[in-house]
Image 1 (tube, one colour):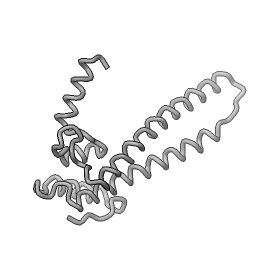
Image 2 (cartoon, rainbow, N blue to C red):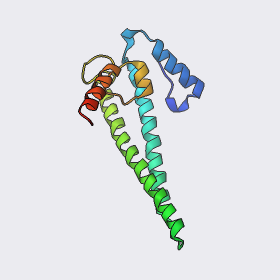
Image 3 (cartoon, one colour):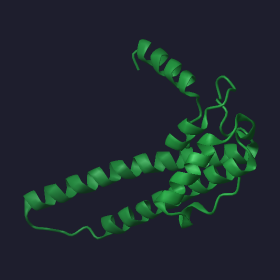
Image 4 (spheres, rainbow, N blue to C red):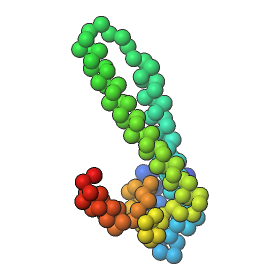
Length: 148
């Protein structure tokens, strides 16, 4: 399966590429073409997050001093929210980098708990997934029972 670079695909073409991945036989699971698709998708997502981080940094540097206390409080709240979003994005960048390492070492797409396939549908929905849906549900039930 050959897939054009993701950044050059229209929404319809991307949808067709995803449909082709879903329709592929089990014997093609995590083939070179599929791994290339997910590598490109993860890199595109990583690039978008890095651009967002750059934009946030630029915006925070443009912080204007304002004499009005309510305006200043509003700006500080906005900046606090931006920093929380940026922290989530930083953590997500880490999971993307880990997924790219898994692609390179041949473990991408395989559940780290059971060793079973995670599944194309789940990876399309969450390309950084490390657990199959069943293993993730089990993990969440155990965590809920421990009160975390």
